[in-house]
Image (cartoon, rainbow, N blue to C red):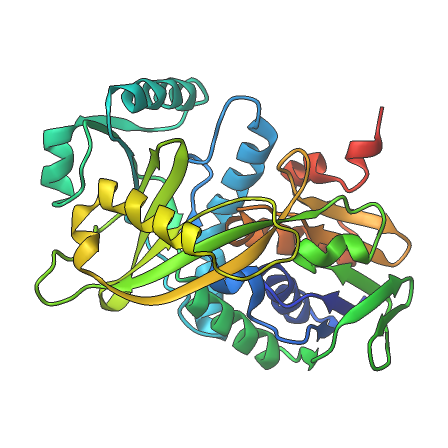
Length: 362
């Protein structure tokens, strides 16, 4: 039965839920003062549950891999409804800069193989043959990882949601309850409210233990005299800090990401820019010759156990938030879970680990 659904939040999760719910026949309203922006707008675009994996985070890995499996169909349907999201199947290369890093890389490779993930170890010479200009003593090739152009994705989702009949209210939600969402300027009535407000979700429901984690990214563009960007996503750790480089069409490269506690501060620090550029130059020295075209910061929505909150919060209120660094990756499985709950059917089994009240359970 069709329901009136208010989606609070217009980032990648909120827009994915809105599009899928509207396509399923529900009457959808998205409440966000600036839909299609926020943390999703400054994301790197990696869809990489495998190279994000680490011992002890198996539930997050299973949820991420289930969502990754859904991504090709999700992207194809979105291309038909809203536009090409720029899905890349080139894979990821994880680089070790020195012998100490190589030992850690070996730990990651052993773990991934133990859980049945395909990886290939290559030497530094083989790495340079595959990705000219990338430095390292050893690397892992992970062909199963995908990437997406986050800004193409957000535009396509907003277009697709509108074409399927979703409406947009450009306002901030201040209270969510059964049957209504109160905003700064009024109230939106509904049968079901979906909280997908990212780092600000905790303000809307006490069960959502979500905190902001600040992340800075840079966008650069190749110049005529410099090497082109790598063909794959490149990941590494420089002096204990993770660094990634994600290629984009048109010779652009997204560089990220810092991660630290800073409350709701979204300014870009000089230290963050310096650390990113210095770290990236260790992995890909030619980046020094690139044009720096943008600096930006966003607030990831983090939970204590790295899992999101997906499911029922109470009568007429659902959660779809707290995806930490994996919002883009987990958008398909999250949207499918919310639509299943709206339709009264079982959501994907992998989302059970992300039930909202798990952190308070004994």
